Amino acid sequence: MSMHTELNTITSTLNELSARITALVETEGSAMPPDTYTELVAAERTIGALLRRLNRVAGRIG
Image (tube, rainbow, N blue to C red):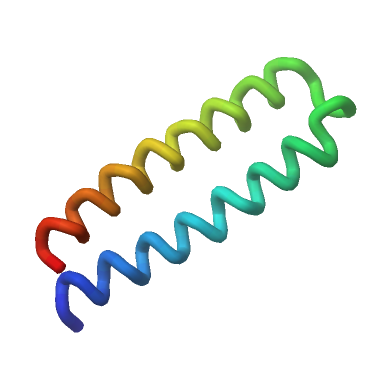
């Protein structure tokens, strides 16, 4: 598997994970303990930052 293909696969998986976390935060956020909500939002932001970095790398080698 080429590096570009592997990065695309990883990016796709992280996009799906990000969407799932976002949906969880949006639908269940008000019922969550505040610390759980805060951690999930932080995880969502971290995945977003990781996706931006991976997209930059993929753009350089693509």
